[in-house]
Image (cartoon, rainbow, N blue to C red; front, side, top):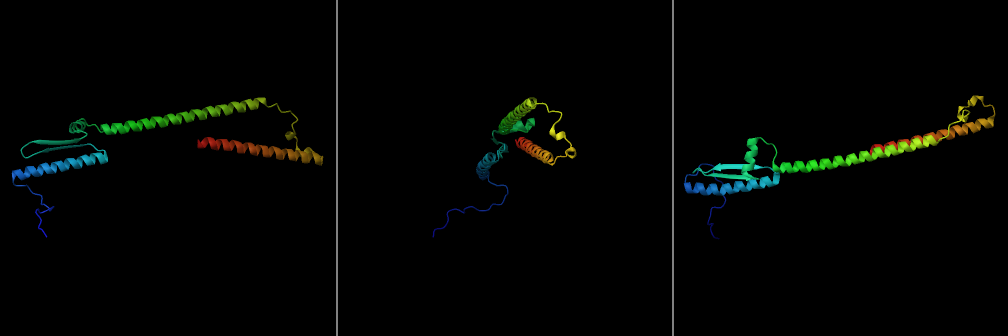
Length: 181
């Protein structure tokens, strides 16, 4: 077996590095690691980041997503939204407007349909002949003495009752269908 040429990855204790050259190398490597992590975090979460650091010699290092300047300006101006959230907001607004337009069209079609049905009902009501004064349903059943005539009157009442029940069912179904739409 050959012995290792390097110590490998080891735990280091956080304290100031004494040698200037070692400090600069560590700063360079760790700065690139921070840039990578911030870039990944910006992509994964859709967040905006600004990173500012100064080396021991006073040199500034910056990183920003989408750019350092844009994030700093947004921070200084107190703006809560970014360009990506503007895009998200505009997509949301477009979807919202399309949904409202769709609902308005549906509403208008339902109103038109209701008006057509109302016009048909008015037309049907106008075409009905006026009822005679001596209509059979106005006759008092107790006043009828003939048994056969009573049976006929009862059959007419039962038929009228069935027609009224059917009409009520049809109207309830229309109302249910209109409520579902």
